[in-house]
Length: 527
Image 1 (cartoon, rainbow, N blue to C red):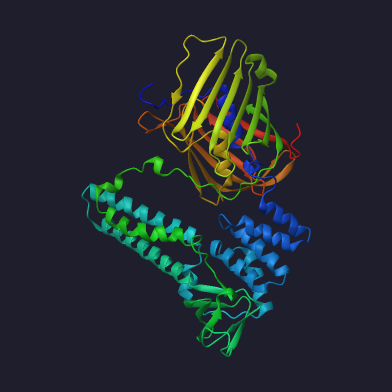
Image 2 (cartoon, rainbow, N blue to C red):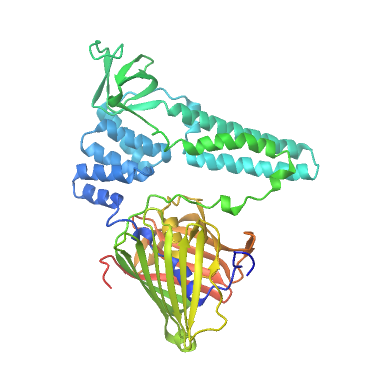
């Protein structure tokens, strides 16, 4: 061992089984007795729209999601709050501009309330065809492509038409990014009437005579504020004062405008970087690690059964129970054993218990034991603030046992917390979540990329699934990435619903094709 970092080493049998399992383990299992989103859906189905509204609002406190906003709008509509319903639908469309339910329901709400709308020029409609997040990805992707092309040509001193065309491509992408940034900032001044009717006054005073009133769901542009009043430009071009409580901004401050703002800052610098060989520098993977958990954080106790196989032969089985400890930690209890012909050739029984914090998915401790025919190996990993510390012991004792191993990097997950973190994300098409994972013996960089949606039959039923590509790279002594010698690639299928069950994984490893698949799940939590 050199320095403080252990070189990528061979994953033991336990680590490989846990890798297959945890890549497809349902992280829905870890954050509270029943998630606010699930509670809201249940209340809505039961006709308790007030309770549904409160639960949907709680589910949106951390981060906004288009489907949850659409459902919140449905609850408001059922309660007769047409202005609030229109606001929720418009926010959903700001995140997902062509969400069918939000488009149809917003049209119905406006027709019912008689809402009046601001004029929107055609070019603004074109620029908002994509969500801010998608537009950012398109802009940055295009800019980086032409940046790298231009930098490559500059490195070889080829300043011909291709070079200047690439520079123009960067500038066009920068212009598009700037336009998106401007439109997003401009939309930040738009507000929606959430009251049943909002009286428009010539001055910010209740005693002033109201000139007109706007029905719920109408749009206004806020030009200024004074006390509890907002000075607005109205549909049709008029101006007047409305009470601040009668309108609410379409884009909440700090939740829907940050991404495109970052793009507006990055893109101008890309045009300059394109002219220098420095554009060829690689990005440090440590700067790309995801640190903020997503919104899928609910926990409910469950018992899962999985089958594992190799080259078409079922070779092992596993039972996993998820619980919440008295200390409030998410606990995963994993038991696995080889079966059938595989057991006659290679007897192995394994058990692992891991815990993590439910709000952040920061791992706390991992204890795993692998029992073979002639020995038992126990691995304990404590996840400290400065990084994990690993200790191994063996029965019968091994005289060559090594000292505790340390990996000094703060943002590290075990396999359990890594999957909880990944499944908590929105997992939109193209999302690529990168995490540093310490399964028990050495650190790895894990990258899960969403590559599509599929229908899949697992455990006797059909599921709508999110398909992810999974890649692993070893991490060397100097934090450089090295190829994983035994793992080639994997695909995982996650249920595309409120539970986010990880249903199946298929992997290519050194010994061939291996797979794991859910057999059944019991949400009563009883083994």
